[in-house]
Image (cartoon, rainbow, N blue to C red):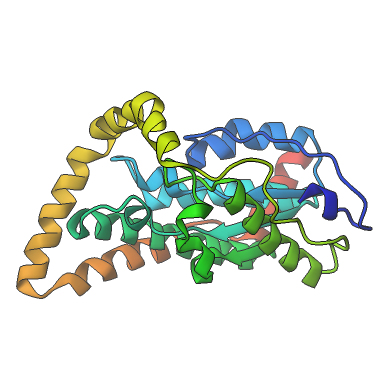
Length: 260
């Protein structure tokens, strides 16, 4: 997207400080510091799915990290790009009892992302509303990260949103691929190499808690009270947002610190 995202249609430098497997707290720490040193005009902050795949998931900590990241970039005058992400349980093809708890976590993260995007005036894209998100070709072999096609389609969504803001004036990013789409052989190779390690790690930091959540899911389904679980995650997201300092309070605290 860099070739069409300049303020006057010219190409811009692209700096990638992302890291596979990063949590929201990692983005608010090492990645935010590196990004701010580059003094970016545009910055994409698309994070949260990895947090949902950890036994330590806490929507309050995710909200605090996202608030710190987006708030700091916007205070620098950066145009921030955000997106709501699809349900990881569905993307991984997990059984219903395992997928639904992960889906609730992702909806909680998306609630926070959507609210903070509005609070700070970020350029926001609702990925969950686009049909291409369910296209297998749009995802890499791990089914959690976009393929080249997925990245290009995401770039086009952001370009459209930036154009509506009068920021991007160039042609939309092309969907023509530079390489082949993920094949069955590539999927098998990924599972035999990196995928096996990923599964082992998740068996340690996700599976025990997820199995407990799945058991709870089954109990509520039998009782017909599954809606209570949906309400809990939604209330937790709203409580996390309510606990965050308002932007004006943050600015006042910063001014007082600088003055002192």
